[in-house]
Structure formats: C-alpha cells, structure tokens
Amino acid sequence: MKNENAPIGLGTENIGKLLIQYAVPAIIAMTASSLYNITDSIFIGHGVGPLALSGLAITFPLMNLGAAFGSLVGVGASTLLSIRMGQKDYESANDILGNVFSLNLIMGIAFSIVTLIFLKPILLFFGAGHETLQYAHEFMVVILAGNVITHMYFGLNALLRSAGNPQKSMMATIYTVLINLVLNPLFIFVFHWGIKGSAFATIISQIIVLCWQLHLFNDKDYFIHWKKGIYKLKKKIVADSLSIGMAPFLMNAASCLIVILINHQLISKGGDLAVGAYGIVNRVAFLFVMIVIGLNQGMQPIAGYNYGAGLYPRVISVLKKAILYATGFMIIGFIIVQLFPHAVASVFTTETELIDIAVPGLRWVFLFYPLLGFQMVSSAFFQSIGKSNKSIILSMTRQVLLLIPILLILPKYWGITGVWASMTISDFISVILAGLLLWMELKSIKKQKK
Image (cartoon, rainbow, N blue to C red; front, side, top):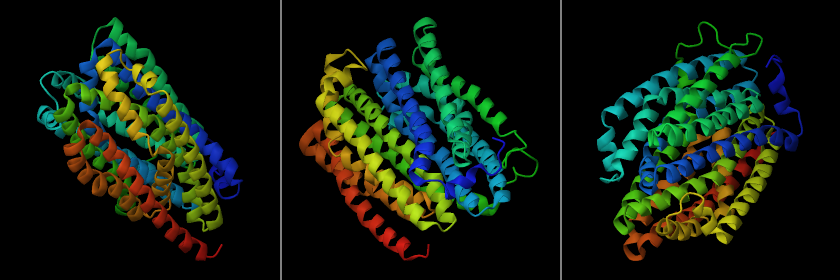
C-alpha cells in the first residue's frame, strides 16, 4: 500500500486487464460472502431446525434495512473517492476516509439503538409467528448489538477497493468467511448456542477483520490514511456521498419492504414453511446476484475514475465488458437451478415438504436471470459515474413500482406460484427500462469529446 501513484493505472492500463484485476477479487469476495450466508442457513437448518430457518428468513427485511444504511455511506463514499482520484484531488480523498469513519459510527449506533428498542414489534410486523419469533429475536439481538462493527467493516472495505487495493478488500471478506465457517459449527453443534451462535460467529469474525482494516489505513506512506482533521464531517463530502449512495440505500430499503410483503403473502398461502422455502430461494438467488455485485464493484472504480478524468471511450469499454460477463454468470445460475432444483434445495434441509415448496420457487425466480445481469450492471454504471437519479429509477422501478402491485394482485389468483411469478415479471419489465435508459446515456457520452 506504499505506492502513492498506484491508482493512476485506472486511466492507462488495458480495460480488460483492469476489469479482471479489480473484478475478480471483488467477485471472489462477494461469492465467499454469499457462501457464508448460505452456510449460515445450512448450519441453522440442520443444526437448529426448519422453523429456525423460517425464523432466519423473517430477519431478512431488517438485515436489508441495516445494509441500506451501510451502503448509503460506504457505496456512496467509495464512488466519490474514485471520481476524486480521477480528478487527482487526493486531499479530498483523505477527508472522505475520515468522514466515512464518522458517519458509520453515528449511523451504526443510532440504527442499533432504535431497532433494539422496538425489535419484537418490528419482527411481528415482518411476519414472525409464535413459533418463529423466538428464533428471529435471538438472532437479531446479537446482530444489532454489533451493527456498528458491520457498518464500519463494509464501509472501509469499499474504500480499500476504490483506493486501488481490490486484493486486500477481497482478503478482508475471505478472512471474515473463514473465521465464520470455523465459529459457526463450533457455536451451534459444540456449544449448543442455537441460532444466536450463528449471529455471534458473524459479529466476532467482523470484529477481527475490522482490526486488520484499521491497521491497513494506518500506513502514513499511503495516499489516504488516518490523521488528525479528517474526522470532522464536511458538508460537501457528506452531501455528495449520501447523494450517490441513495440509489443502493433505496434499493436495500425497498428490498426490506418487498421481503415483508413476500413473507406475509407466503404465510397466508402456505404457512411458516413457505417462508422457510423463500429463505432457501433467497440464499441461492443471492449467490448469483452477489457475483454480479462483485463484478459491479470491480467496474465502479474504473468507470468512476475514467469518467472523472474525461476518458469516455474507456468508460464505455468497461461497461460493455461488465455486461458481457454479468450475462454469462446469470446464464450459469439459470442452467443449474432449472436442471437441478431438488438437489439445490436439499443442501439446506432434509424436510421433504420444505423442499417441495422451494423447488418451484427456484425455477420461477431464475426464469429471466439470463437478462437480469444487464439490468444490474446498468444500474451500477449510473451510480459509478455519479448519476444516482437514473440508478434510483432503475432500482425503485424494479422493486417498488412494479413488484409491489404485482405481489398484491397475482397471489390472490395463483397462490404461492403467484408470489414467485411476481418477482420474475418485475425483473423482465425492469430489463426493458434499463435498456432504454442506458441507450440514452450512451448517446450522450459519445457526443462528448474524448
């Protein structure tokens, strides 16, 4: 981390080489993170029981809401950092580091206090029943108590990646996963801590890795590092970071609302086990979504830097390559799920009834996945170049304007199948909108001087 000019290669190196250099570590990190969520579910499903798996699914909206506030700071600030680096404004880059620390501290603590005070009513509103409330409550008390650690860990990891250290960002995530994989079975099967053992494993692993991240930014030879005067919140940095981060914030906040609605619809049509089935579908779908998110994270500093530097042909080039790779990943997910849905569901549980509910859900949700990668890259691209309004339009259209009304109508006539089909239909329409907005943006970029 001692080469002050390391990020300059973002504007000169071959785009394909850069995308691989930045995206592969991010993809590995996101895949590892997703696998860690999947193994959490596997350990809970086999070590605690199918109802615990349903209780875990009840917590998804609150987890999404916590992630929303984390991304509001981390994603927004990391994008702003890439743009400032492209403009060679290293003084502002260092201030961004300090402001991220301060904002995450404030938001992380505030979110924990509010949600812990009202935790039981929140979980009941999210769809927790008599049998699942205990599991959801035990898990979230631990997670929320360590929420500020989670926010800080993700925020600093995003800055590491944007500051020209994708490998260290990747290793931070991998270390978290490996520690979690050791602690999870230890706490569940040996100490018999139940579902809260999984939560303790999550927070402890993040604490250990956060200490390492804090140490990395303590290198005074690196162009951004801890020093006096950078922690005071600056209006311009805060406003720009929150503006850019608003797109992923609204996306995660919308996910919270959507999961609540999905849980309520599934409970009314199929009971607690139907919610558990959604937990399985969600984890599997999230694996491939996280791969594309990793790709987008690799694209973001490249697109942001070159856009800030006015190197527009390079911006278009990295966009095209990201779309191509994202489509390939999603096609792989589509093939696996459509051909082997029973095998996929059986990884999480041996409960036959739960598997039978999850299988059609998997097939429906993955139906248009070969097209979804394009939509996700398009949304991330607008965010990367600082045009958060268009990113917000894409995110909110898919998850709110389309999905909510469909979810309210279709299950009335089609039961549980209507819930699964609602997600598929909204994905397809959002892809068309993404294509229209991206086409208009590319026309505008091509008109600008090289």
